[in-house]
Image 1: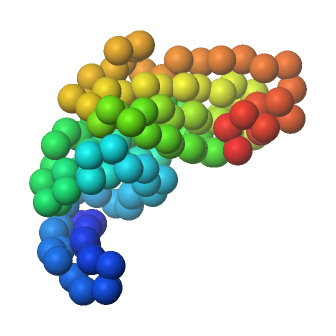
Image 2 (image 1 turned 120 degrees about the vertical axis):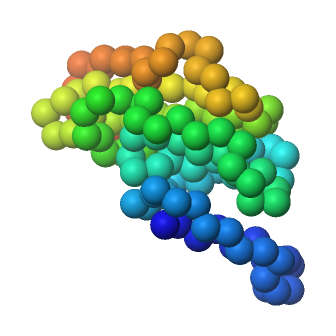
Length: 126
């Protein structure tokens, strides 16, 4: 269970909600509409609106293999772009876009981009 809490500028709790079935969430970005988009269990994404309601859930759509170096940025329209770097010897960098409705306009899985060296991949995906 993951808890999400919204606080005001004085630090007072406005609401707190639990989301079931999540081990952990990381890499949070604004959705551009007072909500958030975040990475779930290193392989999926969820969007929560300004009131803490789950708007969409995309479990296990980023990549099939374990990854490192996740980064997420808002697209300013309710969606996000995610960059993902493969583990150790995997020199691949993956990119995924998800729109405000939870759809993947590019592909159902992240698109792989290959680089010549791990150094280049590291620079791109963190």
